[in-house]
Each structure stands twice: as structure tokens, then as C-alpha cells.
Amino acid sequence: MDVQRLIIEHGAWFYPFTFALTFIEGETFVLVAGFAAAQGLLNAPLLLLAAWLGSFAGDQCYFWIGRNFGLRLLSRRPIWRARVDSALGWIKRYDTWFILSFRFIYGVRNFSSFALGISGIAWQRFLILNLTAAFLWAVVFVGAGYFCGRAFERMLGEFADQFSMIMLGLFASFLVIAGILHRLRRRRRRAAAAAASPSS
Image (cartoon, rainbow, N blue to C red; front, side, top):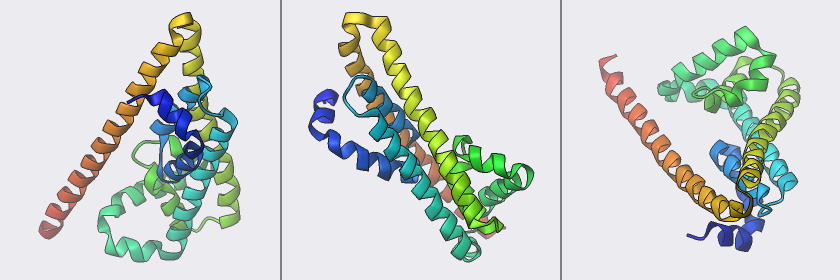
């Protein structure tokens, strides 16, 4: 697969795609896209904006679901209880700092906004902190990919273009493999919880 040609031909779609992926999660994709922006294949400010707004909108949505349907959903999905309780424990201890940093905490992030909706925090406060936190997250991940790409370019000189395409291909492959492994892990967790529930 010619990654460079793919990005050049369909580059305009990468920004809404970034928004859609970051609405859910998307760290690995944002790193890859930041690397591509360093090669001039994508517009870095537009990429940053798409990642920022996608991450912000996703967590606002999960917060709203938690606020309006959280306890009802938990009663139907007891498998979620441990992770939601873990997030609520962080919220009690660190409050503002947790809202600003939960995107960087593996294993807690997916349920954090949902748990915050249940917690009773004022929606206006969460909106402002979430907007700030989403921006910080986007800057860190887009910036990490971008500066990694620029560093490779400086180190490799005239071979940078060829090597960058190889790295983009490897990153894209890693993205696919990581997504598959994440789904398999999630299925195993569900199966384990389903097997444990009759005995409990």
C-alpha cells in the first residue's frame, strides 16, 4: 500500500476521519497523522483542530449519557461497575486534575466522562475543563507525532522521504494491529465477566 499516495489523494477526508476517531479514542491514529503532517502531507493546524474538537465532543457526549442514563445503564451492564467505580475514586481524590488528565490514563479514560456525568459535577464546569483538557491532549499527541517526524527528517537528510514513508506504513500497520488486539481484549473481558456472573 502506497501510504503517501493514499494521503495525497484522500487528504481532505483525514480531518473528518480524525474527528470521528478521536470522538471514540484515536491516540495512535493522531500520532500517525502528526507524523504525516511533518512530511507536509497533512495540514498540522487543521489536524490539531479536528483532534481537539473530536475528543471534546466525544467526552461531552459520554458525560451527557452518564448524567441522564448512567445509573440505569449500570444496572443493566454490571460489567461496567468496576471501571466506573475506579474513575469515581479518582474524581473524589483529584477532581479538577483528574478531568484535565484522564485522557492520558490507560484503562480509565473510556469510562471517565460517563462516570463524571454520574458524579453530579456541574455541566458548565465540566464543559470548560473538558474543552481545556481536549486541547492539551490534541497538542500532546499531534505534537508528538509531528516532532517525531521532523526529528527523523533532520537525522536522515536526503533519505528522509523514503524512510518516512516506511515509518508511516509501519505506523499504519501498528494502528490496525492495535485496534484488533484492543477488540480481542475487550471480548475476553466480557466473556470472563459473563462466566463469573452466574457463580456470583
